[in-house]
Image (cartoon, rainbow, N blue to C red; front, side, top):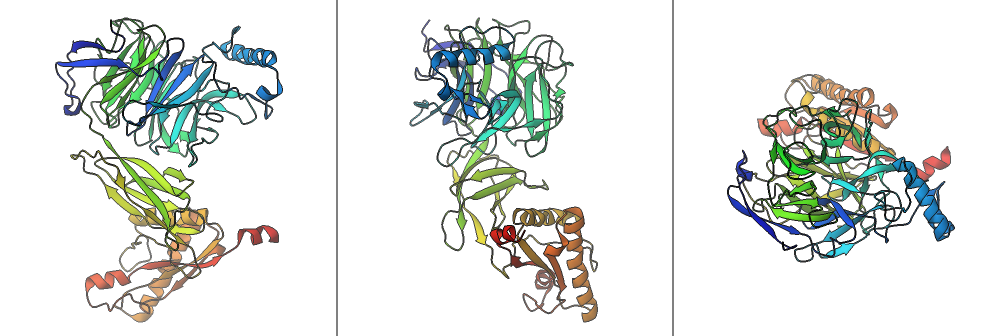
Length: 555
């Protein structure tokens, strides 16, 4: 059978219009020879949201990154080749729990490779070095919503060694990678060396494949929920609708969070392992359809696993050993219909109009905190945002204040072009105002309404980010009412905000002064209700910017 094309009539009935693919002829093709090799295994495909970059793992290849840290020193430089091979074999044997004779050709020799599409087919192939790769097992599991971050298997120390778990690494502006930062999963344990992970498109859900004490048999699929920065809840078994006494591995969650792809060697497969998918039938994570098994040619009489679906291209990517060694294949499941939109832009200094390094914080409207963070080293950013939701974005950097922007993409449109937008940072100056959304109070009272807590939380984040800054909170009213009462109300409202920042957000009280200005500084002439509403406001003014070096000298 032709290595480069396998086709068969494949009837697929799925309960969603976006996947309504009936009686189509599907082509399964291996990726190009620069990616797939006949002598080595290529596994674990992970594709960027725009479908233009592929990350994969190559096993047992002699050009692996030889960096091997021990007590902070790279022993690949200190030892001769024989000594290095012995040491590496000893480390792999310790990981395996059995003797590893030839470490270079073993399954523990895993490196991450990447391939970019110049035209169409991932033809620009590269092999990143340390710290993304080292002589220990390295493999990508998923991408975060930020677009420039990867989740990799294992936790690593800069002094050497590894632990079970996962880490996140970020691509910098000079195309290098940061040292992997460990992800915290509460009560994490895994009784099997076979482990993998999928992340939801919004970054709030993890689906893990692993074996624990409550597993039905071998590897089961588990769910974790985000509880903080790089922190996740204890894994919960997805239950008998998903798991069996057999192995459930390599999960992938579709961008809309409704379809869970995975591989299993359960009864009824064509070969050792086949690719399946489930449809989430409700809003809960225990509401699942019966499992659907892909038939030929996507599944074969060999091992087929590690599915990764990309809606921007409509391709399902997966690994299979149907032609000998494990290779990466693709199959067109549906027409291209990106569920997410790529947003590219710059962070600009409003004073110089030049790019400014910083962070982009973003979250959908309705979430109190801007948890997702894109770190930009060169003042550019690229995010993937889902259609059908309104997102808040703001740039942040010490010494600057940012202005929040909102953006929405219609769910019934197909966006094939990137969306461009810029975010702005204002250099902080004495007596300049901090950009803040309106803060609302109960009528004629100094009680902050709950809907304004998010604005106050952002102000607290600003003060924590810029810890050398002090502020003055100014309360203002319109001109209706007794002037003495208006003056008192404006003072009390300013104090109420300070109390929230001090007692709820633990900001140092000495950094905050308050003043009530009543109706003395209107923005307009108070001639109608709309104009009066604009005068009932709170302003936050920067009163002090301490120099960091001076603070350190004075200690």
